[in-house]
Every structure is written in C-alpha cells, then in structure tokens.
Amino acid sequence: TPIWKLRRKLRRKLVEAEAEAEVEAEAEAEAEDEIQAGVSFELESPRGIKFLSLYALRELTMRKNELKALENSLTKQITAMRTEVQSVLRFLEPVGADIPTDNSEPSFWPINSWEKYVQFASSPNEHISTLKSLLRSCKRDKWSDALMAMLNESLSKEMQAVINLIGSDMRSRAVAAGVATNLTDAQLGFQSTLLSHFQKAITFIYGATAEAGRPSEQSVRNTCRQQLKHGGDRLKGRSHRTGSQLLSGVQTQSPASDSAVQRQSLVQRLQAPLLAAPYKTVSGGSDSKSPLLAAPYKRQSLVAATPSPLSGSAVHKTVS
Image (cartoon, rainbow, N blue to C red; front, side, top):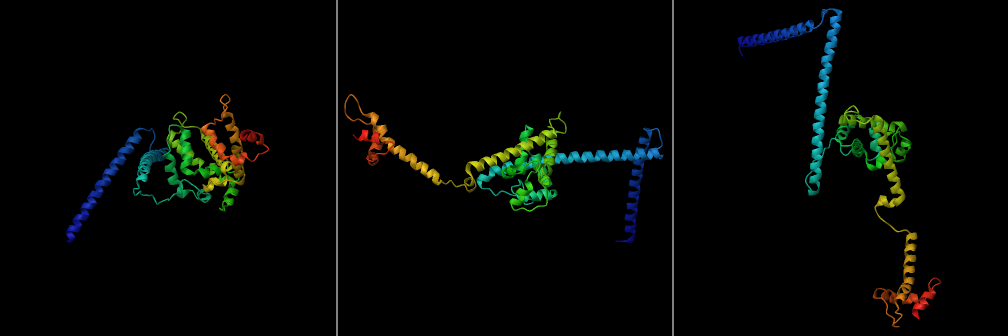
C-alpha cells in the first residue's frame, strides 16, 4: 500500500474522531446548560459539584433499575419456557421419545439425601441460580399452594419429613445418616438454608406489598413450618402402619397372623353344621337342606364326628 494512501486514511480517521469529539462536546455543553438553567447556583461551585455527583448517582440508579427490570422480565420468560419444555417432556416420556436432559446440574433438585442437603447448606452459591428459577416457576392462584409446590421442587417427601424449621436435632440426624458435618443445628434448619429463597420467590410472584397480594413473611414462615411438620407426621404414620414392609415393598405374614387365620378357619368349619341345621323342614318331616349350606356340611363330616368343647352339642344334634 502506498504511503500516501495510508496518510489519507489516517487523516480521515483523525477528522472523524475530531467530529465525534465536537458532537460529544456540544452534547455535554447542552446538557450542562440545561442543568444550569434548572438550578440557582454555579455547577462549578462546591454545591454544584455535589449536585452533579448526586445527579450522576441518580442516573446510574435509574439505569440499574432498568437493567433489573429487564433481568426479571427475561427470568419470567425463561421460567415460562422451562415450564413449557417440562410439560412437553412429560407428554413425550410415555412414547419413549429421546428426551434431552440438562447435564449442567444433574438431578440435584429436589434434594433427596442428607449428603445433598448438607452440601447445599455448606456452599449454596453454586446451586442458587437453578433454585431461583425453580421457585419462581411455582406460581399458583393461592400462595399456600405455591409454597407447597416450592417445597416439592426443592425437597423430596422423605427430606421434608426429617427437616424442621429451626434445625432441632438435625445435625445428629445427618450424622446418623452417615454424613459428617461441622454445621450446627441452627445452620441446618430450614429457616437458615431455604426460607429466605422462598420469601424472595413469593415477593417475585405476588409483589412486595400486601395490597399486591403478598402474604406476610411470618405467614410464609408459619406455613413452611406446618408443611414440614405434616411431612414428619406422615412419615411417622407410615412407619407405625407398615414398618419395614413399606421400605421393602413386600408384604409378609407374621406367625401371629397365621395362627389367627387358622383359628378363624377352624371356627368356620365348626359352625358349618350349625348353619345347616335350621334348614330342616318342620311340617314335612324330611331333611331338606339348603343347596348352599349342604355342601359345606358334607365336607366337614370328619369335623362333625369329632365333638369339641365349644360345639359338641350342636354337632351331635346335626348328626342325629
């Protein structure tokens, strides 16, 4: 490239830069004149400098609020898209379609083990982004239903049953489950790990004031506490009702139940002749037994031949 072309190009760039600088200077001068026209003091004075500083801070705050509003809008759109994708995936799953999965945070939510819960309580920052999106997608007509959905998105039913609000005995429970931790009971409590994120999600969904539909923070706290308590009660009920059979999924019969069945069968066999006796005809004098009861009587002939203390007289009457 000839030198004269390079010089011409450089000169053109300098002219463009000077023109841009002049435009910026004119814009600054116009803005300064506009600001100066609105105040009664010189902008170069200490008071003017303070005013300009506050003015610049105000502009930055407004810009920050605009960016925050844009972030919230984009978050809502992403949440809606994610909800729609999950709905489509649930529809396609029975068909056996190839369902894409998000491998960025595989199956961390809902938390379904003490290991994951302690991990989140110790270092939550790496999982906050996903949790925030999950909680914000739980919008319901009733805020109490939204809280229940948030609990199900963040904690499995089993973990809801062993976690409480203030953390009572939670460290010992974690250790008993084989997860060693230096966190205290209070640090493991729901109000220390997840409640604040629930409060922020409720504010995002229902607004920041009661007039907008947001429940009080105390109401949110109490509802979470009650739901966790109900989870513990449900787990206790299942344990008392079925014990280890619920965990294994296999129903077995105990010796006590076997003996009860045997006793019931024996009583039924001994009662069969008693049931057949009333069907003897009185006027005709012939033995006309009911077809439904005669067959059981014949099958129990051996039993009828062996009187028992409970039914000997009845058996004797029938045989005669």
